[in-house]
Amino acid sequence: MQEFNVSYKPQGYDWKREYAMRSLQIEALLDQAVNKLSGGERQRVFIILCLGKPADIYLIDEPSAHLDSSNISHLHRS
Image (cartoon, rainbow, N blue to C red; front, side, top):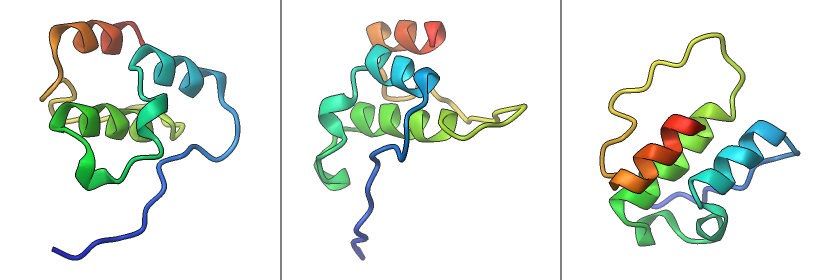
């Protein structure tokens, strides 16, 4: 599998993204390599990446896949 050098650190400050990152507890994950993340951790990072882009409508297929009940609850509140 080909590896890419990708950074998931947000560029700039957005209070909504900051709130979502705190709610889903991903601050500590931002410096880790993607292949080191569990399925649930990866899913939480991808959700923040998606929600960090302004849009009128978000089409997200199974956003709660690989998340435990606590993180699903945080996701719904975000």
